[in-house]
Image 1 (spheres, helix red, strand yellow):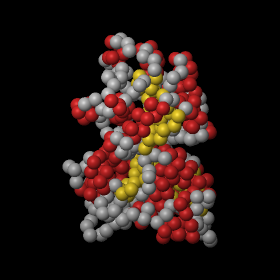
Image 2 (cartoon, one colour):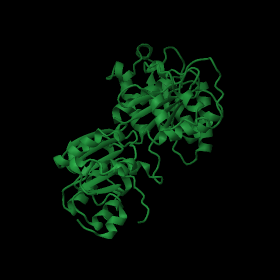
Image 3 (spheres, helix red, strand yellow):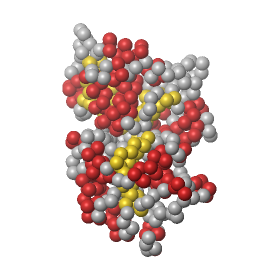
Image 4 (cartoon, one colour):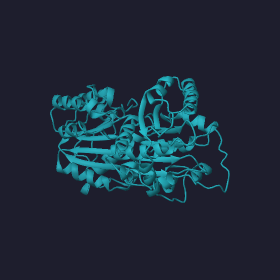
Length: 435
């Protein structure tokens, strides 16, 4: 193994630590320094059975309890084949045994299918500072020298997401109806379910309609704690407390429910939800905010700071007026953000005069993301059963609309429309302090 001081200064993980029996951790000090892994999706592509075994052991470690890790053999070629047909996860781990030029060319090919924000760890057998620098310049987050042990692998992942200079893990997607009763909550809950299913990524729905929220009913959940407990005890709010009050709906979807009671009034301050959202963003990839139809300081502040906004409207004049007011305000307070997604809901109600969705959107200067037809039998049955549309009838055209909405708000590219780009433009760069 090279003792090159440049290599040792550039990365704490570039040179493997001395081997321990069965690849156990090296000692209490190193074990304590490993950061817990947030709710990320990880897909590993190994070449050797030994690396596969180490990754499987890492999967069972308590620090990886929140992460979803999938493993395959085949290295970078297998990754290219997989992501040509599917969106990329938060983190890709690649073991490579190719020569330098082949490795770099393979990574460039993989970049054609990768989403912005995807991090990459490469495990290789070449201990060379030039290769390391070329990988980092391409946007690879970390390079580990094989053979790795469990401590190195978990530690490298933890450092990526614990780095104070890195961007927050999570993205907030705010669903808001422009008029009461237009079905914004139904769209939010189905959109979140589709997002979790299609991306196989962790999604949390926060029902912010404290007195009348319906997320618990829609997901057939009856949790004892939720949003109110989180915002009422800011001194206790951290990732551990958040884990305790989340209600698990399925493998990738969790709920932070509203109390939905009138035993108290809910007079929230303008920044009531800021700490909750910051805590969630630090460990959850996708946060869906179900915002009630009201207008006050905290609603305005939440919309101002959301990463994506989905406006839901029915095709009538009152909805158009309200939508126009909201669009004008959002342009003013979010001048550098992309415009909201527009969902037209309850379209084609029998005998109701309606504004055509295209004309509605044109008046707002937007495009229609989806026009969801008025189907009371479908939506009523799903609501009464505590099911999503995709669960009740996955082949229905409405279910596919929710899938399309999920991809649109996720920020993930569609593999079929991915354009060629360099790794540096697609993989989120891991900023390092000079050694």
